[in-house]
Length: 280
Image (tube, rainbow, N blue to C red):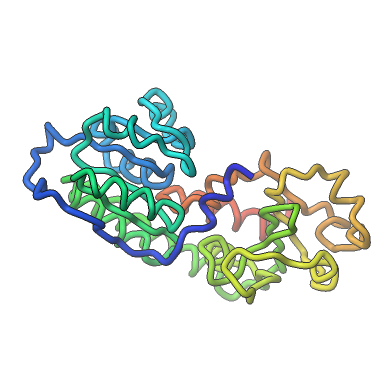
């Protein structure tokens, strides 16, 4: 599944892999290559789209990012294309790009590897990115808005009866999310009760029979299976979410609002909260 790359990222922190003494680069001359759609979206939200000279194919929001030179995809970046763009700094994300980050660092580039997975620490990471790209004022505004929005959502959902939620991110093998994952945090913050709150990993395999036993009130399926396919699963016809027609797909709630750790997390929270508590 093309979006699953985002679900393998580690703990939320900022790591400078290497520095080439280019911290005094002027705003006007800064050239950035970004190898993650989350990071590209964050940088764009800081009014710094013009600083990006290259991205990966997954960088599709805001739409103007699709017009930038592409250097491969998240899992297969073309090192030569990156170097040809002569960037002053490169942003990479997650454990999957650590080897690439090391290779880029060997060339003398300034490389920043950022792991995104904790909702409450996202504002601080945005501040750190803003500092790196000389957009501290914009970063402060975005971070403050995020903190306020997250707090308001928690207050909104507090005291309400939590619906049991099942979110499916993959079909073969069947996979869901734990409460320790970024997506699990969104579900909890929006007022849902994740039926797989505890798993061996943030994003892990599950058993179909455990979904049936948990009797979720709401299902969100990003596994690309059709409703007909899901209904054909043994025993699933009796799940409350299916019986009450409270099963949602990509067309109902954009996966990028839920799976990508970006400022649009607030919109994702609002959409989830509406799904959880709407009486329509």
